[in-house]
Length: 274
Ligand SMILES: [Fe+2]
Image: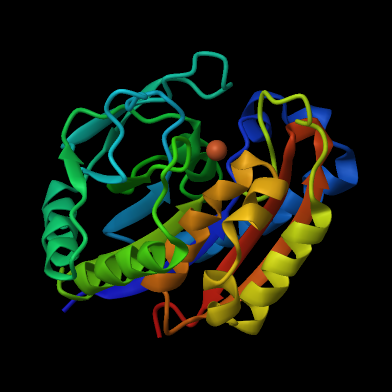
């Protein structure tokens, strides 16, 4: 048997690492304090591996070849690919055995991810890990979910993928963490990039804290569009909810940080490891 020893979700805006000081001090500190809470929890969990559920921003997958989701089977990763991120490029260990198990459990539940063994890590994985496991010494399985190029997986399917990840973890014999990385409202590169949808973000986190899965799975696609196309990344949060379906989500911080172009949130799932 394996066990889910840590579960969390957080935003991954590049500015968190690349231009940290641009954020107002109070907002920056609230976000970083919450991330530090995740770091303490992850450290105490003595993890054998961390499953990071995160999108790809055209670092590995492009318009002409975009899987709905993809499990990285890497022995090792290199990253970040962005030389401007403020994090030095390094090697990060992979966990191919667990990755293979995730593939098999997903197939068993009717979801067929792509598999790739030569992916490189970008800010979607590196930024959260730089705060949660900053030594980058915990082996990583990157589960990529397409949040960039429609059509995208439905929210219920994202949740089911999370359930498959959890089934693999439970069968793995390992102590495993899950980290969902994405969102909330933002529209990077768009004219409205600095207009965050705080109302959407707060409503989403309210539904999360209430554990109202039905409400989250019923969010209309048009409402996600309104919140900015970056809000499509709530799929990563929904997948993390699937993996931690028997745990209790709790928002640790939310700050609409215009300097980082993103509604920035941190949540932990209480009860992991018990
Ligand atoms: Fe993103």
